[in-house]
Structures are given as C-alpha cells and as structure tokens.
Image (cartoon, rainbow, N blue to C red; front, side):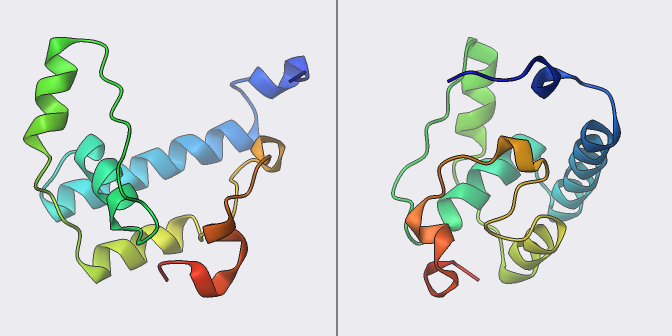
Length: 112
C-alpha cells in the first residue's frame, strides 16, 4: 500500500491526541491495577469475537511481562471507560482507516 509521507508525521494535533489517549489509558490501567500492556491484551481478549491475541514480544523481558498479565480480566466498568475514550469502530486518525472488521462494522456485533 502506498502511504503519503505526512502519514508518518509524529507532530500535529492527531499525534498529540494519540499521545493524550495513551496517557489516559495508562492511568486507567494503573487504576485497574495492571500495566498498559496487560490492559491492552485483556481488552482485546474481552471481545467475544476474539479467540486469541498475537502477543508479539521481541525480547525475553517482553515475553515475561506479557505472560505475567495472562490472567488479567477487565470488568465492565473498565471496558466502558476504554470505549468512552475511543468508541468502538472509530479511528483516532481517519487516515489510519482501512479494513473494518465485520465485528466492528455492525454495531449489533460489537461487545458494547
């Protein structure tokens, strides 16, 4: 796929919004008693259409971290707070939009 050079620009309002969301999600993870990595994996696995998640560690330390969070489960309140930050089926940067998984395309199929 061809991407415009500005797609990779790490400055500007979209990049700033993404960084703000990372900060908010990190705080949410802390409030939930887990790391951001564990929150991310637990979030993915909370979706009823997801049966497995690709963890993708590159180092033994990353693998140890991911495995340490294998039992993390998020309650409905935490999941709702994540959905409030980034509503299901949306992209923070519309330029990142591409393939829309069917389970996010139809609202009735979404987890929430």
